[in-house]
Image 1 (tube, rainbow, N blue to C red):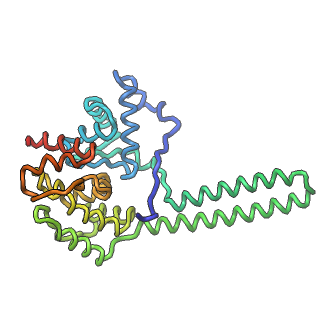
Image 2 (image 1 turned 180 degrees about the horizontal axis):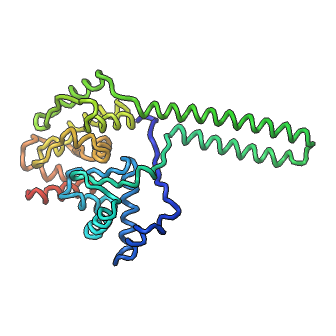
Length: 301
């Protein structure tokens, strides 16, 4: 996996609970629960800049969120209704956009995190050295102070170089060779799986695929596509569901395919033989089997 993984956090304002909207929410019956749900939704959306996408494996976005954050569906509906009325969220088709989150996101790459830890250790060493030298001559103390200031300036310059390099990595776009490789590999999958004809710059599927390549690297994207060949469920041989490219490139779906959550866990016979379905389901891990039964129930199978 690529070493360009980015870590995110949510910056909570010090007047969050004193704002008029949060005071109104907390005064509603069950308001404390709704406030916690709103904070959970913010955290859930930070790696997608405030957008929570409906994956399509549940009946609606409310059931999906109930599984994601372990809260009751009715409480989630009440929270979203309040947030929508107070301009805290927007509905984008089946997706939910938390409008205040983009301004509250903080992030850093793995390389920046390592650099920050290294600088902290260096500063701690300098502080210890400073304490040992306090009893020395004044001239020596002045010399040490000048040396420390020089080292801090150098560290700041290095940090700027790291941040510039990280921004360049984020802006990296796919080239035509990578696009053709992805299209050809995808279209070589089972005939049950819908083919793709183009990945045009500016489209949602292009942006999502480009984000997956920047986050995981091209090799892992190729690995995830190949994993589909090892899943009768994704190939449409278990029920009416078959994977599509737009479903595949969504963040939550992609990582499950990459990690093999849908991969057949034991040898199967003919894909179309009805008697093999029960043994296939037993081979799934607990979480995936639960998702499978819920999806099957929703489809009336």
